[in-house]
Length: 389
Image (tube, rainbow, N blue to C red; front, side, top):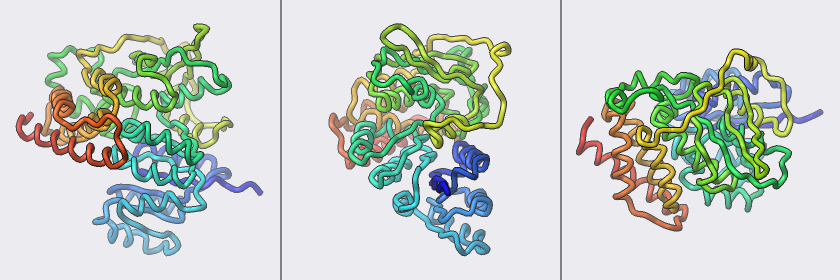
């Protein structure tokens, strides 16, 4: 009898986590949930645990532990843990085959490192892990023989385009971007957009943090950094194409001039499932692409209007801990914008100033990344208080 793959989902209550559970439910003969984790959403985490019967669940916010325990009184077989250390330890559990890192932000770095060191296959949806510490993560993955399979739709598309190409050199990566809700707006209009405006993404249904990053195109900047580490290319080989329809998820151009792309309707279950099943393709229920109904348009990104994308390229060029600085500052301003403490264009101003003020480290260690993250957050938070929206 074929054993089911045991999967740990870090961030099971978020957009990626909930869709991953849909994939697992559709292929219950192949996959089983070993562990589910969340940061704050105890009710949904308990609901998921009742449905999928994992061996363990973890709530990162220790203050919510008693609440979660009370909701799980009728399931004594499910182990319940709380806190950041519990996240690090649970991914090391021997039965786990794959860890889906669907946590948002810097918080995903440490548990991902622990999972890699435990030789788990990483289904990577937490782009900040590679943005912050790409060199370290890639080295650890090689040392520990841990495969990293991309879950971001764009990086999955690049990965799928490379399957079967062996060592054929990549000439260029064509990384597509929807352009977000402000693609056609002027700088004057963007200066006055609201949180509600920014959260209305035209093609994707994502969590609030990523949706705001998409509106500022910082998300695409992070994806450029992620692609550099995942596919071993220079930033100069990665071209961002604004593609409003989100049908071409990304493409690869080879040295003979040919281009391979992966197309499909915007549905995150597809890249999630491909990471789980690689190299096999399994049936996935849902809408199919009808090219007769979808025009395909491509535009160059406006780096003046979307300076966050330009700053991400600058961070790659400077290297060292600069991407870590940008990520930390972005997490602070993103949260401030969602809490109406920061204007949309002010986010870029604070990130740029933080890049100037934070301590630069050319060859950072793990400890440097920790210190850099804390320092950049302090600087960005102080800048926000000194120049309110």
